[in-house]
Length: 282
Image (tube, rainbow, N blue to C red):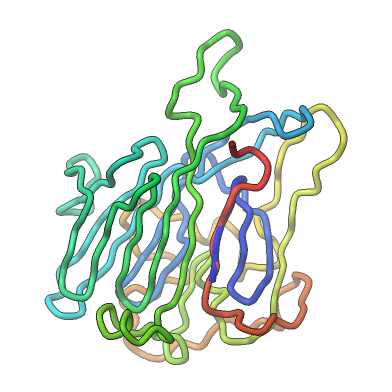
């Protein structure tokens, strides 16, 4: 499983961890695999941590997903916005200016559903992606003193990525991943490398000062640098490590070249990963 949590904290597929600040209002590839692409937008946010420390960090506030139907070749395009609680957005084209609010979209071998509690789930190309909307506990205005905080600044997203290969019923409906033939990539996706080695990247070490600014960009747990994962648009699929249109075999990353701390993966690791917030959530 792969997950992410606030600032965002990354739980990587083999058990590694890292923090990823991103860049304010920039798009990053979290998962790129044949026929599926997941891009997130990070935004700078300040909040009061438990204990009173003011943290100048960041959160995932939007997630964009593009999945190709294996039957018809149709593209499902959807986005989850942290401040849009009861529905997601569906798009007919890559342009994000025109959309329809939906709670369910289904194509052959692909679906996107709105669940209870502000959660969304997407299935396709052998993957399952969960998105969970959460509220900051004590957010601070990022504009100026004395200006009321917009409600939209109070919400963020946690994410979870799971491969469906060992779930016979789901794999029959939504396909198998290409892991073992075409390795996935992206900030989260590359950790599904089959190595059974947990690689941890840089993590922010919170001090006891009244204020703290996060800086970690998951250094040591990523191939290349974080700017290699910047996407030109929400539904763009092309970047340095793109796999969306890959047909020929692509080997996974070479874990030995990563500089992060390495340990043996725990039993059962390698099928899930994601991101989540540890310090600022209600």
